[in-house]
Length: 257
Image (cartoon, rainbow, N blue to C red; front, side, top):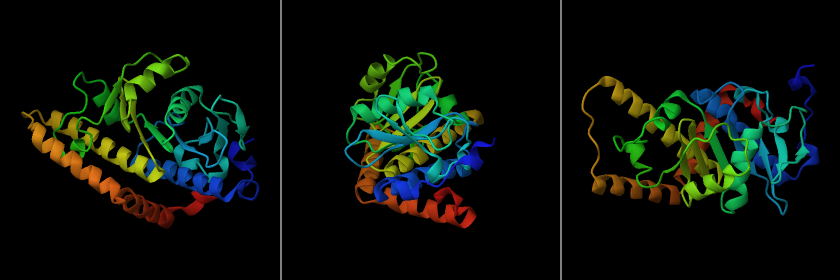
């Protein structure tokens, strides 16, 4: 049986706060599909479920990003037990290891977004990582963490090293693997991912040109990074998110079902 056809609406049996979180996370998946930030059924986005229980929502393992709906998302607790799995597909174990580590360790983190794009993987495989060669990259100047590849993330003991590496930063390069961003809201996490993905794509394109690259000075890069921080504090991520969701609504509002 097609997993999509057996998913029943969950809106009437969850709190309004959880339903809002579900709709926003489903929108993030669909927007990532529109941007081309996908890797078939792999990679994962998550959002904390508001309330006293330490639950978060993540994608069912087997649906592509453009198939995700608010009702299809899986609710899981911090220990990996499935609380609500409307599709019956379960979750990607590697997704649980990465996302539960961050949700457990960082109370302020509401959303975690992880991608395997070509540009992100390419930058993650470069020894110097993300270079300060663009305005988009300056967003992360001295504000980007790195975590060495240890194989497919299935071992729980890797969580301690991942958390130690990310520290207090909201963006992480998983070396030889991909990119990860987080935020106090899903709007903030999506804003961070947009800039990190664009910065990575710009770097690979610039390097492909073969000419000598202009590296921003420390002073200029820091000035730009502080400008971005002011933008985040002034609700720029919400403006960015709302515009993206309006585009999604025009194209396909089915994500909100």
